[in-house]
Length: 315
Length: 246
Image (cartoon, rainbow over all chains, first blue to last red; front, side, top):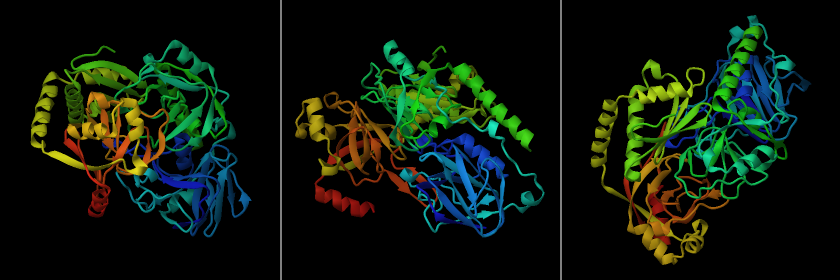
């Protein structure tokens, strides 16, 4: 089956789970910005975890030339099939020749489109994930974002479409993407080099998401926080690390972050909250709260077991 | 978590990662200790009891270890690392030494210092109170060791630059640094392998390609342990170099 891109929206990429084990050569982790939505999209489209899908910003339009099953997820996602509004977070049967339009109500949020089947896309350094900066992945394997006229080849799995029960995630179980709840941060790295005053400032102020947000990192604007070290050796930067350059404005490091860096870091955003933060749009305000490592792991185990339970109930 | 052996400190990085910092008589020594630990982990990671290991990222004197939280917690990771036998570590240290002796030829990187779109020479001059000529002289006078590869594919961290040339990163990182930019920060020097954001002070441009491109895989041209020297060239020589590399 061919999926033709009629309108690429603002920015759309073919992504998958990303590159594992190659950060030591300088290849970034990559992968979905919102891994929760990505996992749900594949589950709802009857795909195995880690199957490629499209991560789109803006409204994207595609045409399929065979019957297939699709699912759209993300923060406030919208979906139209041949102009008829259809539910997101649900398997949708689509007929040959149908036009799929999807996007998010919020400009700048990411939406995920999974299409059931086997994606015929090249892998570069172990993954199909597009990293424009590294010229890796995507349709051509050279890191190009999707554009009008591109055709993605997917071998559909017809077995699922006829007999399987369509899957849907109840509204009340969809992840909450708001920022009423603080973003949890695990103290780490150079945490002890920040003064009590600086840490207190960080925890009690609101930070505004700037317009400089991309797959590498999210720059925030607010009360400056600085560490009492000026020169440090570059070291590995983990997902969600909050680094503070000399100007004191925090940058949260995301999926396509550089592997090593030398700015002081006060810790990492909890793995439970990284997807939520990745869906923030410019102008939104976020608050941070410190949480110890053990508690964060417990929360993460709860979150994943809850997802497994929900998926078990849907099956 | 109690440090042991050549490890100086063990620090939490996130809920699913810890970072080890190594000690040594000097940076070179600490860097070797770090690579010994990495090699010891690599030789064990295929075994079933290390299934939790997701990523292991070395740098100058540190090693980040990322684990699968569903399989282990940080205490379990600590136990696994401290159980790596001393024998294992010394074996790795020996083979590392042999590898180093093998590849001791100095690699020369030609630099067009002061290239207009890649020059913070006046900023560096202000920060270090050195003249532009002195900066170039100092930067080219030393041979450097590649301590780590990272930041972006093929980006080699080299050191140490002379103490007099030491200068802090830019307060706000640049959104765009050109491919081939030669830069310094603290006691480190490097070449940007492709256009990217970055916070280092730029000295000039090189035509030396930091990545070896092949059909399926791209590979870093410089490896940890390589010895490198910078050589000044003119704009014409830089442009001629670009033709050759292409």
